[in-house]
Amino acid sequence: MPENLIKSVAEAGTRLVAERDQYTYTQRFRVVEMRRGRPVGRYEEFRDITFTGTGKRDEQYKKHPIDQLDRLRLTHEDFRDLRDVNPFVLTEDSLWFYRVTYKGIEPIDGIDCYTLYVRPRQILEDQRFFDGLIWVGKENGQVVRVSGRPVPQIYGIESSNLFPAFTTHYAPVDNEHWFPVRTEGDDILPFPSGPQRVRLLIEYSNYKRFTAESTVTYEEPIEGRPTLGQ
View 1: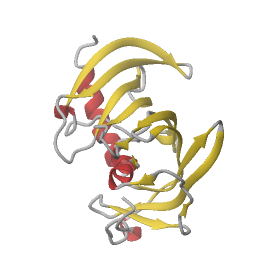
View 2: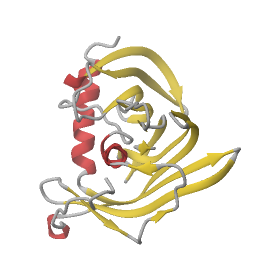
View 3: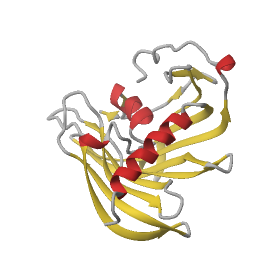
């Protein structure tokens, strides 16, 4: 393994998060229930995401969410994953919660990348984690792709709270920083009532750097709207 690779990746991730907190963007979130190859229910929302001068997140709906899910319901953990897991970045603060294994070099979208397998050291109560692979550009040190699953999966006898595997793609913004631009997943979740195929889409667009004059007051997310439960 290249010397100090994991430490360098965590340092770069810390800088990425700090930079992204200086940008506003629009986030589209869509969950689709599939049955026999056809969509039978969906949830979709658009939010404008901004940050205060201290880095706290503020969310404003662009329009009222569409909730037409059939068998599923979204939970607090789903919306927590939307903020903290789906656009996963390994930082100096989060590094201590994970075991990181170097898997070699692999080309992703024409870019030679270091491949890292990241898994939680232990599952802590009321905490959400990532379990999967990270690809980091060998030359630019930027995250290019993340693919894995939120954990823990929460299994129950009568109901479960399960979370689809996903892949997040990163791309350069302002010809400098690589930010998440698209998260997608297509997974079959083993609920007690039977398997359910779920498609997930998150799009991050309209990144714009803002100044101190354009900050806003942070508000808590709308109650009851902050992974897929049944």
